[in-house]
Length: 142
Image (cartoon, rainbow, N blue to C red):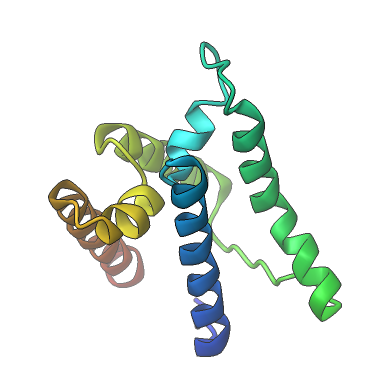
């Protein structure tokens, strides 16, 4: 298993930009920047006036690597050693957790904690604990 590169400055910048985007969305539209909620409202029956804003948010997520290419001259490196079936299972489990937890990591961990939501604190503690257990099992037991 490859070691993860330690990039404190890039991580700090990225975290700051995520926080800034979350604050901007809340201040301008009164909406929480939770990816699962934004994506789920792209599907029917949602057809309200916020549809174009949700598409812009999702397209911004997709365009981020292209912006990195323009700035740095190279695409971000993506190296995934996990087999496709395991990735698909992980995606289903994360999707189930986002529905069951009434939000995703960005909604609870970034926006909910910033709003001092007790439910978001509990959700964040639970998904962080689950991530630690899953990492331990994958790296040390399997």
